[in-house]
Image (cartoon, rainbow, N blue to C red; front, side, top):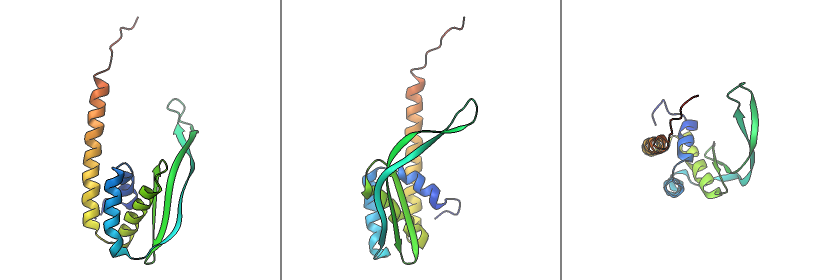
Length: 141
């Protein structure tokens, strides 16, 4: 895996990737990883922090439902969390994180992350163009 890409960065990108693609990829890693011990696989609420742009103070905007998974295998740990209640997707992210910790198939993981980063950038550009098209110039009195 590229040295400039951390596990945290990789998981941040893959969290927003299509769930089925992440699940299928993680499934392909399981034979190499072998048996894993599931520490946690659950849903819960986490506080969503937000920074006030006017004063710069941080406050809690509200609670967000998340699914999280924490696994161990071959002396390493893997962790995944996604917004929503898809515990299988969270488990898939934990498997990918564990593979990264073990140094397994890092080139394939790096390629998946790179593809998803590009797709997400394209999606963001498209959304911004759609939003820009709705901008209305108002005269100031």
